[in-house]
Length: 368
Image (cartoon, rainbow, N blue to C red; front, top):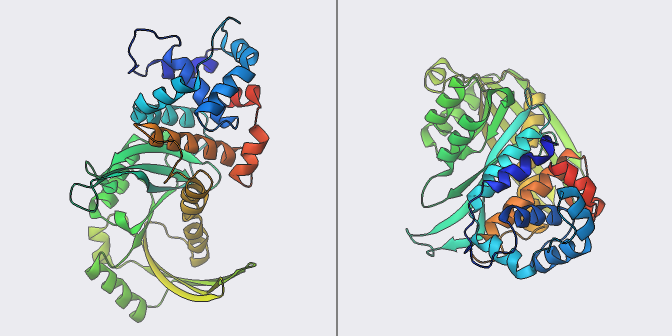
């Protein structure tokens, strides 16, 4: 019973922004019903009110409430979504996901941010601001492990990634963290090295001297290993080839822990159009080319398995429910849903949504 109250106790710590006069429902109840109802397939304010009415008896029994308890109306849900600080939901999500996460030691994790376009304000000027959610995402069906909310005008994704690294408990540190070229910074690599954390970081022309030096190394040095793989699907034919080189000693003095320089070539056909790409990576791992190919492909799961789902399945960039903190809160709810789907082993998020629809006791116990 103590474990079943953990999430509810966390919700009870969230500050109530509503006027105390005329309140009919405690804030924690509205928040919990919002999350539970959404994961049971009721996405929206009127659907959440319908969920509360339809499952009234079940909810009272599970939550230990009297049968005479009145459930919130759709307008109550809407006001709470718009008024409650989204940062409070980030803390709740992070506590919940770590408490219910599989063993993360030895796993590969990615860090990447996704902006929520509908929160953009200030136009394309120096005053522009928007909200992003920076996620730590598992390569092997762990879902989102940690979240951090970021205002573009206040802080950069580089700094938020550092904060996430420092906040991860030592017992959950992965065998390797993969990051985009944005994070190819000596300070970030120094922090990773201090935490004894292996890394795989993209390298692009935003580091012109280093990138040219990497090109020269590829042209003049003998690779430690080479690997090639091919993939053919209904609308895509891709050949990937990887070369692994030993990092020069001069580089290792500046980039702490650096061992390998990896080049990956991708070419083929997508939707009847030819393409060619060449990517470079810095890594502290001493893996073979075939192993690097496997993990670099999995790094893109954070795009395909998280960001794409949020954009296409949940329409996160242009949601039908806006105003106040609502778009960001719904985005965090999407992270709850995607993480549950991954950890329960569903092939797609819609499959998970169909399976959990109206399964109140099952979802309740998954949450608590």
